[in-house]
Amino acid sequence: MTAPRPLELAAPGPSREHLNRLVLTGAKVADLRLASDAPPPRVGDDLTLVGNAGEPAARVRVAAVDRVRLGDVTWAQVEAEGEGFASVADWRRQHEQVWRAAGEAPGDTTELMWTRFHVVSPRPVLPPRPTAGDLELPEGYRHVYGGKVRDLFRTPDGDVLVVASDRISAYDWVLPTTIPDKGRVLNRMSLWWFDRLADLVPNHVVSTATPGLVGDRGVVCRELEMLPVECVVRGYLTGSGLADYRATGQVCGNALPPGLDEASRLPTSLFTPATKAAVGDHDENVDFDRVVAEVGPQLAADLRDTSLAVYARAEEVTRARGIILADTKFEFGRDPGGPGILLADEVLTPDSSRYWAAAGWRPGAPQPSFDKQYVRDWLTSPESGWDRAADTPPPPLPPEVVARTRAKYLEAYELITGETFP
Ligand SMILES: Nc1ncnc2c1ncn2[C@@H]1O[C@H](COP(=O)(O)OP(=O)(O)OP(=O)(O)O)[C@@H](O)[C@H]1O
Ligand SMILES: [Mg+2]
Image (cartoon, rainbow, N blue to C red; front, side, top):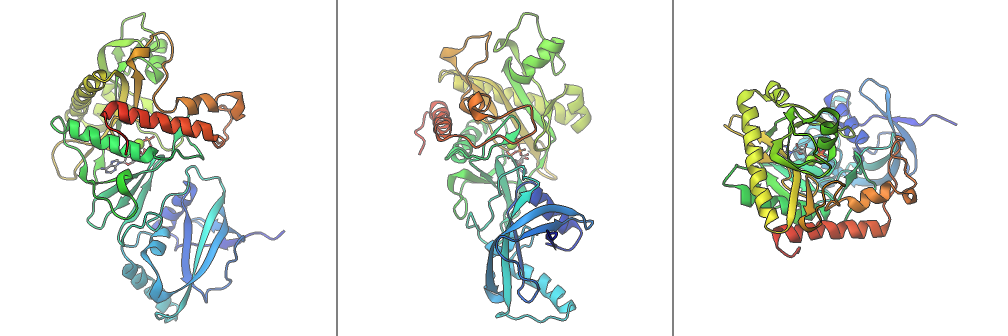
């Protein structure tokens, strides 16, 4: 067997580093080059993606090959390469410099090869990111971040378009199956809450008018310098808070009375910060002093007080609707140069919060959650065949688990907002 041919997608340096990171987190990989560049790739070919130091970075397979004339290159093709060009003209100008230096002088009718790959190994940790082409974003929108659930595109105005996908994560894995409409639920719910919290804290929303096919799964936001603290507030004891309490009698440095149990209501709601983990890692609970060390005393106090105030407001709103907000996580950012903190990211969604039906609340046992209960139950059942302890990705979800999970997200939306999900 011959070794797969090497594939060099960009010049060594920051561009290639960025591309390799995209590849390893599950990006679509695409390449646009002069057709005269031999040898032409064929669909099904396996290639070795070359890393920044010339090392093999990934095994990729050619998924599609098309020819395109230089004058007909589209923004969707340029953006899908992931190299950060601002426009088609910018891409062309920079490539023409390289081509000219190599003694080539292509014109509008020169043929290029437009190749798309998918990653064979290592197995990507995220499903493929959407490209500007998938979402029909106009020229200038560039993918800048792919999270477990959201994708961020920088807008031509320097804002950031935050698009909530239908991806779902459980047990620190992004699952291979998506939940239809989940992204719309999350985005609409965050917006609903931002409105109801606006008198307590400014937020990152610029506009709900979104381009292309994004619709109500996205929102245009100010691009903030995010603070490296997961601002968790707990009104009830469960999850990692309960684990810490059982081990130490405290949660994030807050001493608690003895005798509390799973799902007990806490004497007062607590700020229980955590540090943000990379994809695939657990967040780590920390005490307030760590937050002070991270962002300074003034900001730390601001994060704590604002988080507690927002939780108190939200808890009051949901209680009136028969729902307990057991705990929730906020992320805040700063406008570079601007004063104070802004509430950012997603707010009070079923993904960032534990919502329980007040009528069914029975301390002493885990409460059914409003979102991923069916997913977690199925994944840990013998039926899934998945071993949580082994380091293997979870299997695809069966259709009935998808349907019931989707129904739960919609139910949460309708119960909390009091609106019919459109
Ligand atoms: N206004 C903003 N400016 C810059 N970054 C933002 C803004 N709002 C949210 N973010 C960041 O966008 C990302 C959203 O991606 P996503 O929700 O998929 O999160 P994640 O961090 O990968 O995973 P998790 O939510 O499970 O921690 C987060 O890293 C968040 O900090
Ligand atoms: Mg997030």
